[in-house]
Image 1 (cartoon, rainbow, N blue to C red):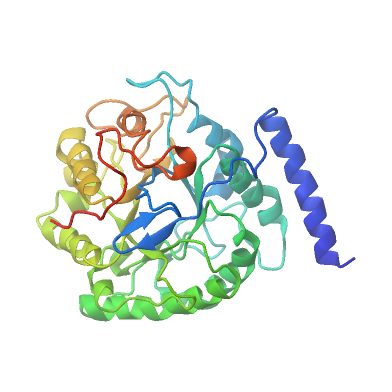
Image 2 (image 1 turned 60 degrees about the vertical axis):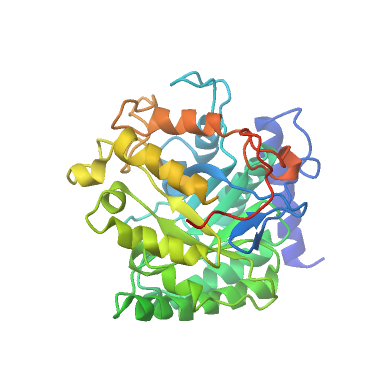
Length: 381
């Protein structure tokens, strides 16, 4: 038997033992499999034709969570606990969890445990158990390669990451790939910046599609994923057909409340004329100490932003499940930060309010809580 086959058997047995201890008595992974998601026009759908809008939470670096903040699986339990009475809701009801992986050479944060192309340790000991745990909880899982920088400075390391990860998660219908967190690529006009990003994104898409033809892809734009409008006219291409990708937007109070707020919103609106948009980062907290435009409140930022993206059927994950990284959801005792300037209780209550909306068929999809059919296309106004 080949060495790789032996490693796979050992990994499967280890994962089964870990997961069996964590949720003994739960249904098998095959019984809880979520349907794969696909881009269809400017929305995301499941195979039954239901429009799916995912709403969830972004963790911080999962290696840091594992080593410095009490463990990654424990964090998953915390933000999926249906018996958490904090706020005005009885528990947590996300449908997607974003799992950032900070590369070894990412200057923003030195992860204590991250991907090494010459080792299976990160995949086998952390990422695979997390992805499988999400499956057991009927959650979609975003594998997020979390660079903050110019794409052209990190082509080779990103190629190595997706060459390794794509074949290992190709068979996981609940796994979504976020190719590169926040490109900068400030090289000229908005169109020139996007074209610079597009060149490298296409390289990574081609690698992924050699191994994983079906996973939904999340493709970021330039200027920290603010410049996505030009993708409407100059998209990446999906070599297996179907253009199964969504464009990524990040929208913090500094963007929503900025004097140039319409510029940010117009990029999303223009992109939505053709492609789905996934807001993989949004969030606010008084702890975000960079001035009032960075802080935001429920009334001037969170509630209007959520109404705006809901009208456009934009999926989202809120940043960040942390008491240490900004903007924060928690306090150091893991109690939620609550109040008009805080996202913790607002997010938890919002996810509960939307718990039955825009679900895939495996979770009872097809009807929104407002009575509208889950099928159709997004609003563009």
